[in-house]
Structures are given as structure tokens and as C-alpha cells.
Length: 139
Image (cartoon, rainbow, N blue to C red; front, side, top):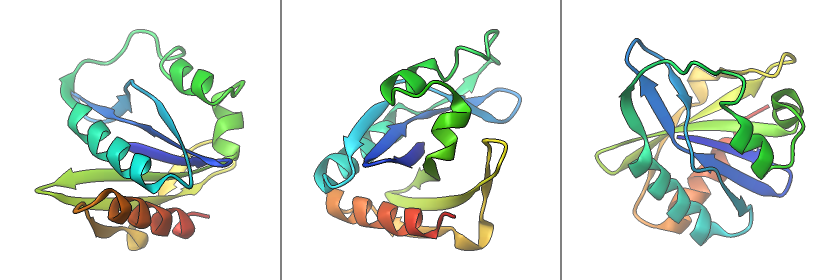
């Protein structure tokens, strides 16, 4: 799933894995106050359960992130990305793998492979603490 530190909020949404490789945005987009550890942890674990596999490529790429932009009152992806830190989270057998990303000038994010780490999913507070640690590694 995707998690973004955006201003004083954390934005969370699941991913859909495409049939021919890659991932795309999926709803719902949930915006949580960055200080609400219980809600952050609960939302991350819920988004993990909503992620899908085996979808085809969308026909309308432009409207794909519209729900994210609306939820954050952003005018464009570039504006959103310039104010965000991004961490991809994968869940496997009750463990989280958190992958911090570097923000590029063009509005994209690049994986920081040496910064990836595993975190426990035993409690909402531990999940939120791991996410905050990952956001601190993003530059």
C-alpha cells in the first residue's frame, strides 16, 4: 500500500497489482491526522487487506489519482508530491516491509533500497511508530 506524509496528515491507500506487472492507485484514500497512532495503524492494516492483484491496465490514466488529489485538496500530482514523503508498505505473514522513497524534482519517487526495513504489525501503535521511522528516512 501507499503511505504519504502530507503536511500534518498521513494519506493511505491500497495498490492494485497489474496483470502485466506494476502497480496502480486504488481507492479508498484515507487521510488521518499524523498524531493519531491508533488510526494510522488501523488504516494501514485495513488498506493491506484491500490491495488487489490481477487487474488490467486502466484506460484513463489521468483520472486515476483524482480521489487522492481531492482528499488532499491538491491541484495536481506534482503539487501533492512536492509536499509529500512516500513509503511503500508490503505485508507478508503478519510482518510489514517499509520502503522509504526519495522525492525527485519531476514529482516521482525513487526507492531507497538500503533504507527498507521490517516492522511489527502486533499493534496499531507499533505500525505507526514504524511508519514514522520510515518517513524520517525519506528525503
